[in-house]
Amino acid sequence: MSVKKSVLQALEENRETSISGEQLAKKLNISRSSVWKAIKSLKEEGYTIGATTNKGYRLEAGTDVLSYEGIRPWLAPKNQKISIEAFKTIGSTNQKAKKMAMDGAIQGTGIISEEQTQGRGRLGRSFYSPANSGIYMSLILRPNVYANEAVLVTTAVSVGVCRAIKKVTKRDTQIKWVNDIYLDNKKICGILTEAVTNFETGLVECVIIGIGLNFRQPENNFPEDLKEIAGSLFEEKPDTLTRNRLVAEIINEVLVLCEDLENRDFLGEYKQRSMVLGHKIKVHHQNNWSFARAIDISEDGGLIIENEAGELETLSSGEISIRRME
Image (cartoon, rainbow, N blue to C red; front, side, top):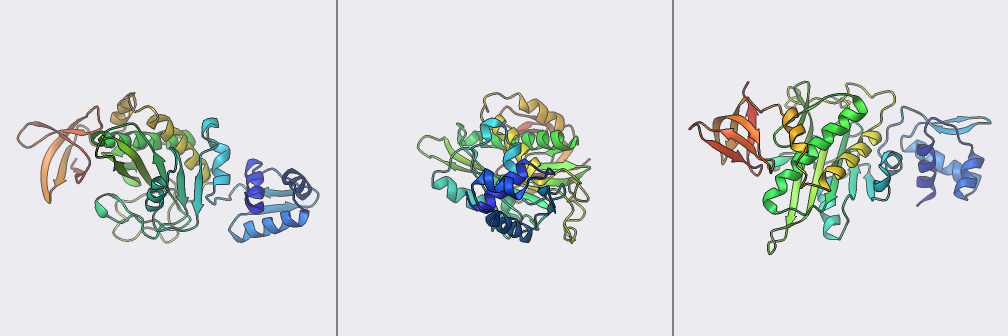
């Protein structure tokens, strides 16, 4: 670990508490000059670090820069050793994760960025990913499931994200099948699942989970085409809650759920949070729209609908999208 990252980790572990340059130097076995240079570099990267004579340095409460060092203190003990790479900007966290997965990255490996220049959603859509206001992350999972069960991973992740938001903000969110999280009738989060399948066994070798969450309102607001549908978890930056804290909780919740997908208990919570069950919907499939009523969620995470002919039908994600009509 570099000197700068070591100093940052020490500051994050003692957030809002002063730690002297002498203590840092001794703890990290480096010179006072190296400490000062690291502090200077961190300030240039956007960290707000207070310095008080005879007390030392402290990371101010309002500092909100995504980093592994900021995420690690909040990870569950069993997740402390997972690898997380943080970027200022990246094309797509999912693209990076896919490359890392092919190179052998293990379960739980994460990629996170302050900004995406080529963020993607389902069906080839772009995902608006401005700097400093959102959480854009991907996790590499290696679940023991068959290809036709991959939608279950998305279902579990949706519940995990909602649980994490509830834990750190006390806010209840809803899920629009299969992969969108809503708050106050506005979409605040999208989840993109991409699977790599072994065609001989039919088993999924790895799943890349992309999560794009609007943590706070972008500085320049949302583009015109998104203003009516997009929202954020907060209007302004919260005083104490950081994105790192929420990222850690998302990782904790998602990994717990995806370690045991045979246990379908989370489907009950998914149904409770559903914003479409019991409602009329429009279904878009193969360039056609049809009307239906959302009835239930299947054991594999599919949406059970009553179609226009009055017959029950189960939708899997794939190339299908839906809209609620009432």
